[in-house]
Structure formats: structure tokens, C-alpha cells
Amino acid sequence: MLDRTAAQVPGRSPDGIGAARPSGSRRRPLLVCAVLVVALHLAFLDAVDDRAGTSPDVGAPPMSVRSIAPPPEPETAIAVEIAAAASPPPAAPPPPLGPRLQPPQRAPQPSSLQPSVSAIPIEASASSAGAQQLASANLAEPSPVGAADRPSASLADVEGAPPPVYRTRLPPAATIHYEVRRGGLRGEGEIRWRPRDDGYRLVLEAKIANLTLLLQTSEGVIDANGLAPVRFVDQRPRRSAQAANFVRDAGRITFSGAGVESPLLDGSQDRLSWMVQLAGIAAAEPQLLGEGGQITMAVVGARGDTGIWVLRSAGHEDVETAHGTVRAVKLVRQGRSAHDTTAEIWLDPERSYLPARATLRNNAGTSEYDLLLQRIDPAP
Image (cartoon, rainbow, N blue to C red; front, side, top):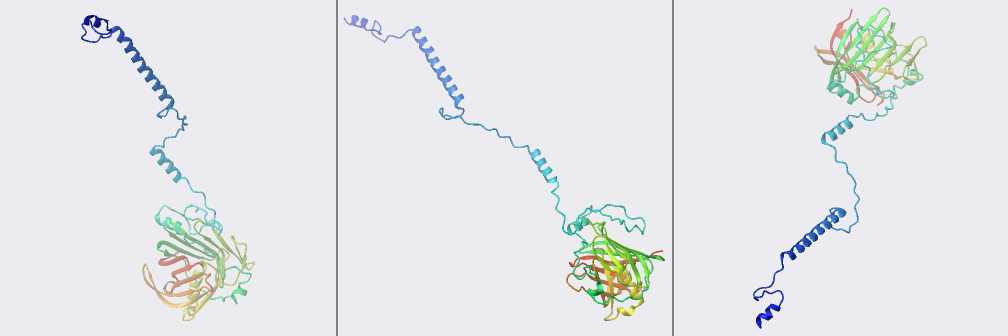
């Protein structure tokens, strides 16, 4: 009976020891189905990744993408910065004092001591450090005309009686070499004094670091009152030349850069001739150099500035020059106001009273020049 029951139970062996095992033909379809399910699942995941990008959230909305340019290479960035730095800045507006910031005209040095008055050359070289200092410091720039030096309808009405005239004994022709001082800078200069039968020519040229600081020319005649200027030309760095014209037939002074006129008084001098005229007066009338003495003259600049200069004796004073000590006579022009030009000059009695030193300050207190004697060369 036990054998019959075991034979009737499905899945068991006839001997009743173990369960019946499926055959190989039944396991193969199951394996294929499992592989297909896995493949479909992987394919579904790939499709989801393609649609959702890197986001694990399949239902997230699509994102907009913006392209960003990569930063420039280091060499390119440096080149751009250099180009920007090298670009010239916009030109600054000109200052209110006329054509002051015109570039200097580069021209050859005059080969003769008598260049044309209407075309005075000026040398300029900004290659040295001294020249760059001069440019940043704005050297020898004239200040606006002061109240006491402003042109007027009549100098006699404003300043009092006309100045006296003096006897003169003018010095012989010479070239006077000076050391030029301007603040802490040093340069060289010379006065070329050339009297002639038909008149005279006088040139002052001062340079610092090969930059012409000042170039002045005075031409005229010699009459009973000494020097009688006819034309005075004043050239400064970065400025056009300006001139004063002494129209003696009409008794007036006109100016190239100013629409004014000034009366021409006897003995009037320009801002260069006054030094040689002063030497001639001192040689002819040395008593004027004593204590309390003074010499008075009308002095005219090239910009329309005129004034009566009273040069008062300040006694004897030693001046240290390149060739020793000079016992000089000092004269001082004190301004009538804070806006006036001041002057100090030391005359050398041993050298025809030519200046051993001369200092001129404009109405801003800035030194236009400070000349210290080096040597005097006689001229033919």
C-alpha cells in the first residue's frame, strides 16, 4: 500500500527518496526570459538618462544651456593691457594763458652770432633726465602781467615823472659766459654783446640739460642816452616768440602778442638791454652807486608789460665765481607790489661794470634766470 501511494504523488521518485527535478528543456526558456528582462530594463534606463541628462530626476523640466567663451590665454591678455597702456591719452585742453603748450620747434643752432631777429631758432632735447625735470617743472614760464607792470596810456601819469636820462660809457664788445641756475638745476648761458657803428646787437641764451630755457635778442641804435632798442624778441620753451617794437618816429611801443601800445620814454630799455645800459651808466656816473644811490629807467617786456624800475644801491658784496671772488656793487629792484618783477644785479667794476651775477624773478616769485659769471671773452 505504501508503494502505491508514493507512485501516485507527483514530483517524487518511485522510490520516494527525493523530489522530482525539472528537465533541461524547461530551464532554458526561463533563462532566456530573464536575460530579455534585464536587457529591456537596461535599455529603459539608458533612454531615461538620455532625456534627463545628468539629473537623477526624470520628471525635471529641461534646462537651457548658454555657451561661455573661455578666458584668453595669458599672452593675449598681457598684449591687450600693453596696447591699452600705450594708447595716447586724450589731449588736454590748452591753458588760458595763450599758446603756451605748443611743442618746441627743433631747429639747428645758429652758425653766426647775428641770426635774423624775425626767426630766432631754439634748440630742445628731451632725451636727458634734466630735460624731463624741466618739462615737469615748467621752467621759465612768464607769469601774467602784474598790476604795476601792466601797460598804460601814459607811464608818466601812473608812475610819476619820467625817469631821468644818464651819461653812459658802454663796455667793449664781449661774450660773457655764465652758469645758469634754476632751482636745483644747473646749466650754461652767455650774453653776446656786439656794439657796431650803426647800432648794436645783444643776445642772451640760457640752457639747462640741452634745453633752451631762455633766448632773448635786442637790436637797436646807440644815441646820446646810450642804448636805444628798436626790436626786442623773447623766446621761451613751448611758446612762440613774442616781440616789442620801439617805434621811435611815432614815440610809441607796440607788441606782437598784445593789442596794446605804450608811450616810448627817453632812455627806455627792454628786459635784456637794461643790464648793459646799467653797466654803461655805472661806468660813466659811479657816484650813483654810493650809499643811498639809485638808477631809474623804464623797462619793457615783450608781452606788453612796462614799468619804471628803480634800482637802488645795496653796497658792495662778494660774488664767488668760477675764477675767484669778485668784489661787486649790488643793486636791487624791489617791486612796488606783490605782483611786480624783482631784480638783483651785481656789477663788476674791474670788468666795465658788466654783471658778475644777475637774478630776475617774475611776479609769481619764480626765478626767470639766475646768472653767475664764469668768464668774459673779448669779441673782435
